[in-house]
Structures are given as C-alpha cells and as structure tokens.
Length: 109
Image (tube, rainbow, N blue to C red; front, side, top):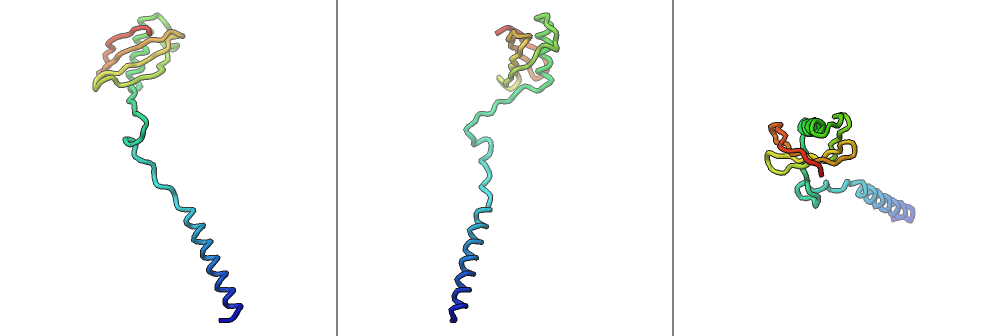
C-alpha cells in the first residue's frame, strides 16, 4: 500500500468515526415515564360548570357581585363531591358541590 493511500484510508476512517459520533449524538432521549409512574400526585379539579355554580352560590350567600368571585383551586373529595376554594373580594370561601350540580355547602374559611 502506498503512503498516499494509507493516509487517505486513515483520513476516511477518522471521518467515518466522527460521522458515527455525530449521528449518535442526534439520537433522541427516551420518552418520559407515563404520568402514573411520576412522583407528582395528580389532583382532579372540579369541572368549570361546577366551579361557576359555586361562585354563584357564594355570590348569593355573601351579597358580593358574582363577577368579583374567583375560583382559586378545586379538588375531588370523593367520586361524587368536589371542593372549590373561592376568593370573594378578598374573603376566602369554601364550597362543596356534587357531580349533579347540587351545592352542598358554602362556608368562609
């Protein structure tokens, strides 16, 4: 093998090595684990219509304009009941509502 050919073969082998290294860097990371296996807990929030029912119930109970009442957070307590935390012009209020749309209670917190 001539010296030029040996150098060309060496350069080609080096180029192929770099190309393989560059292509292996382009491989994407594996997908994240499914939600049920993540360390965060999942909280099911109340549907928007039930949150609005609570806002209206708080407006009636407190005499505050319903446009001034904002749902702050909500969570599912059991299969048929949601708890909605609301801010009624600075007054914190808790509302319990069932999946049928019946407001069970409204109380200040």
